Picture 1 (cartoon, rainbow, N blue to C red):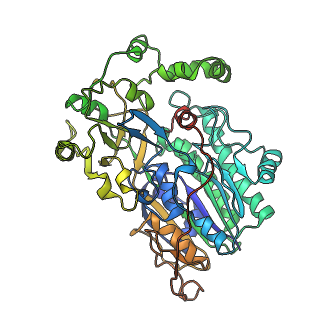
Picture 2 (tube, helix red, strand yellow; picture 1 turned 30 degrees about the horizontal axis):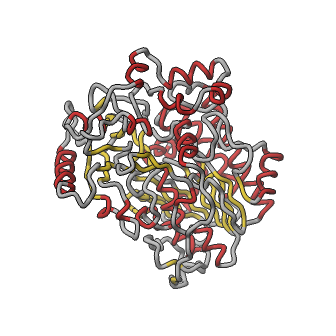
Picture 3 (cartoon, rainbow, N blue to C red; picture 1 turned 45 degrees about the vertical axis):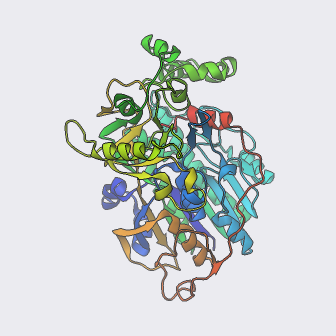
Length: 524
């Protein structure tokens, strides 16, 4: 039978625990009871990118040369956005192919543009998109006949329509996400039947968007019940199954506007521009998108209005993402941040003041407390090259933040205060996710949340389960989850030389990648 991974973006046990206890997720409960479940810890920052690649490669970002969706280059003063061709590593399915096995990948983030496999790849959100409301009609899957099959037989869509957003999260948007969950499982069932791969991965992604906007509210519960219902089809087929997540989700009690804090402390300076004037007039992206959506004018306006003008319109929280760099007074700026915590210094590491500035920022950030509750805003701050390990660790952001509990770090420039009790997201990203190995090869120990594994352990464990050897450049280790009566449990772990993971594909232009991600609102 096929070995399956069901990836659930942003899942964690505390989020779904009450629903499990109430019997609302019986199929997931059965997988847990029959298997080995615990807590998976993601790499910092706890984001979709890089963590889906950390899972797929068994490596930390220091071996991938990609540390999040994007990076800020303070030397060239540019925002650089990544696609699948920028990751310098082979993945789990490349090794399965090299061992003579076939593999399929459905809807995993950071797979666009899709590469060729002995099997198939169906690229997933948020990166595989043209605009906020228009999915790719072609070029989202390889080989071509799989894409034709999905489009012709299932009317396959990469993104929900209408797209959920901060200003548009009504019943139509919720139902579009629920329909997409059904479509993902339809694709999995049909492609398993049609292609019969030895291994298949499926990511359910947009349930995370519901968690961002509703946390554990009724729309999220409905999404989990849909997921659970569709899991039932695979329980009696004899599959080895891994259910896992890239990170978890916690309720946002505090928004930390890190760039506003940097500005208040004199580390960052801004200039006045058109963004300020538009915001003063009440013209924001949220309002413009909501109005265009109500009038059915989203696509016509995107085609008619130049991208350069679209980007000038600020968000309600202020200037974000690629626009942050455009409003900086670079002569007076020493540090600038992305959301979720990476901080980039304007000083070169060879500058005599570079290390002193890093030490100063670390001390101030680790001492920072919520003005009213006294809770830590930041758990810890790491030097990038020390937190990551590998040949590309020196390319990491200068500082990495481990956010305080229930804190969401935003890159917005413009808020009056560096903190707020609420923001765009109700649910934010946390490092603790889930894993559950269940099936003939695995022990039946149930759930123990204190049973921890790194997200980088999942790929080597799957490789060993399928009879493969573990590449010596993987950071992860094979987890002790196997039944002693299984073939994998009685076999010693073997190692092998790594594959060359560099891709020859020509990647998408940075501006195109940035626009796909920004339009989807997933760089929040």
